[in-house]
Image 1 (spheres, rainbow over the protein chains, first blue to last red):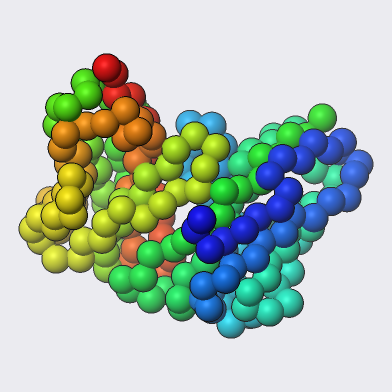
Image 2: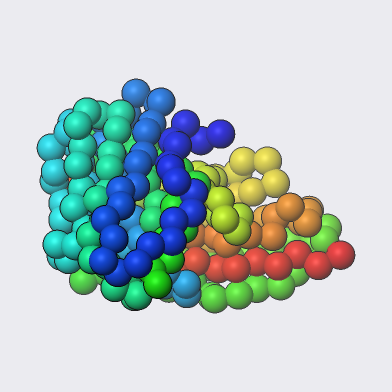
Length: 115
Length: 109
């Protein structure tokens, strides 16, 4: 139990579907992150929220839309995805964004498959 | 830009010692983290180095040389449960983590 919970664990969707990934952290952290993990590639940072404000968007296509209603919850809304978007999507949290020695705590991820 | 390199795969025997290397090129270095990730699970924090030298934590130790842009994770008395991917991540001042590609370690009986 890492204190970061992601749902669903697995998701299969067609390219025209709309779905959302959910992340919740119970650690009292103020920063939350979305990462994409593809086979044989490094973790790719997608979005960062610090105290509910988006601080980073790493050139992510607009078919991915994040939402952070409060410091404990983070969503990733998905719309008209492409087959290359199939990957493991990981949520993480940390005490504060860019805090020097605080590690990130990760959820188990959502395995996304696009048909 | 930033570049982090790790070996893709390593194999070792139960009870042995294994060293996983990480080299990095970055500016404004502000710490290096190691994470362990079992297949289908979350990456979990193992260690943090910001000053040169060795940090020991039970069977796991991590070393850093800032002048060489080099770190290693040392795993002693290997157990089957240590089979996992090991991720090296570098932090720069005012910026976020950058992860290496990860090293997949297989521990054989």
